[in-house]
Image 1 (cartoon, rainbow, N blue to C red):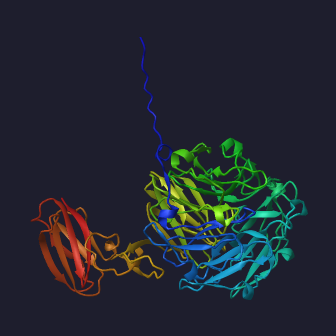
Image 2 (cartoon, helix red, strand yellow):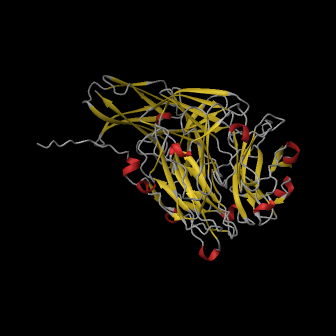
Image 3 (tube, rainbow, N blue to C red):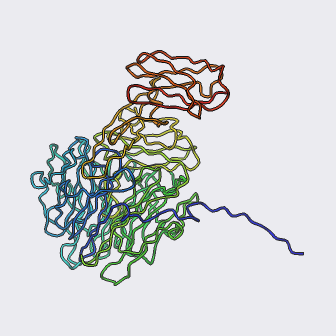
Length: 624
């Protein structure tokens, strides 16, 4: 007798269905980068116009840079010329940050050999002004990566720049890196040599990061040709000293290092680092608050021994609570490799990664360079942009935009609302597990994700607590935060949600929006409403209506109470689902709670609408 044994197999949606769709052309992103050295290709997600939607900046090498404004509908408009960013020199990488504390994100662009780097001040009206010469950014080098952070703790964001080869021959060594100290009023002083920060490796990556968890930013530097010139380096922040620590803590690899991804892959509450390379990428696990790092690429399955890797980013792409890892790969000239496929690794509870690239639709074969991740459509899952480099303009391949379509879990985003929001660490605790994120001042390869911090929550509908460590070591704790919302937190610990209302303006170069801060009728909640176009009349339930009026209890039995905070006279209407008017009453402005007798109503679902002038607000309630 044969016995048939049936073993049920459950596959995650992220493994058995396509998670990503490449949509660059359809979304209006038509960028190409060309560089005969195949080095250029930066990507920056940042909110240049303050509407809370991530916009996209791409460096072009010998071609044009591009700024794509987010249209709130999954598409982008090229606003490069109007923004004044069409001047690029031979651009390599870029980072953004509020360098003058005016609330707008400025832009720093690194350049090829012999050209000063570029500094664009955001004027707050959709335009940028190039100010490198008048701001003290005058040194010419072969600059690659840049990162922004407050190294000296004076409350002003500084800029660190990695520089590359001194000549075409790697054995001639690298160029010293730059450290631009922010003096205020958009003035900078280059002080790398004076402070011992002028690492002379062939720098391709640099990150300001709190590597030793002491509340200030250290420097991690990724050097190409490490076996010929200089190993990767760590410069600790023990101001005014910056001792070299890579050899002591086990991070002094002598490899062809390219980019750096920062994240807590093992969910133990400290930051780990992934450094890309020509074959055999390096995953460093933080074992003791930065005192020692263990090499874990082989154990975790993330070596990528047959690829040349560049940009990389940790993010929870499937919202299951475990960090995943995306990597851009591609050819270099010297060894004649073919174009290579990008890779998406899925993280798991056993602290190992599984290659899900094919199943997830993350399959483009290109010369990938910069990579940055952001939820550009604000649907709760993280998308990916990759810049692609070609040796000449005549055969340049387009940049890639991967839209994330199938993340099934819950999520939360946190944006720090502070002039110093270029720094900070946020830990969300879910069932006792820490989910740690650090604000990105510039990482990956030539790139940055200057966007709200994203937390995948899996099945959890509530975050037990959120601990925010601000610059200057101030700490706030928020408790019992509901999932699936965008939060903005002030330094005093107060916070509000934000949502958008798109009333259908065209997507031309002029893009008007305004904001309204709404407070719930009972004063317990606040919401920032960001409105594009004419608000018109709201005829159906809107997520902001609860901030105009409250009704309860809901469900209700014999009576329901309604409170509103509108300043002028208001009409209340009750309808059944067929639109039949059942009750109507006029009220003065900002009245006390109104009670409505429901004893004559049949059990069921009803609509309550209050009308004030041309605006109407609607909520549903259940009568038992």
